[in-house]
Length: 132
Image (cartoon, rainbow, N blue to C red):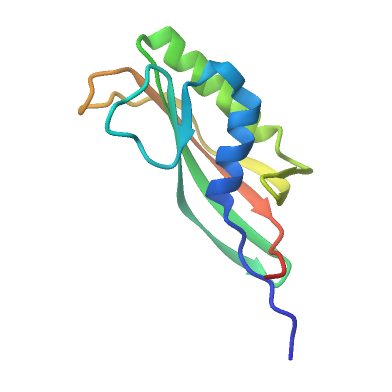
């Protein structure tokens, strides 16, 4: 039987990598927004991607950043983007990231539910599938 290679949990990997890279700049980094929103929140969502071949996967990740004011939210998003790009040729949360590319740069994306400033960006991580 052929050896199985499984698509890694890239959301978990990105959350882990961002938590370490942002440190105290974000109160919370997660895949879900909690009922009580912290002042500085970063959410990672897997929004696309797919298997390229037996040894390569892509994962499109959208990263949203909230803060109490526009300059802080913008800075948080630009810093988070730099952290996400620094994953190239590194292991993030147990996932080897071969390459990172921009899908959509940092942009203002107001949150109608909270009225808090929110900026977001989207990147594509090229990752290596792993053995189960």
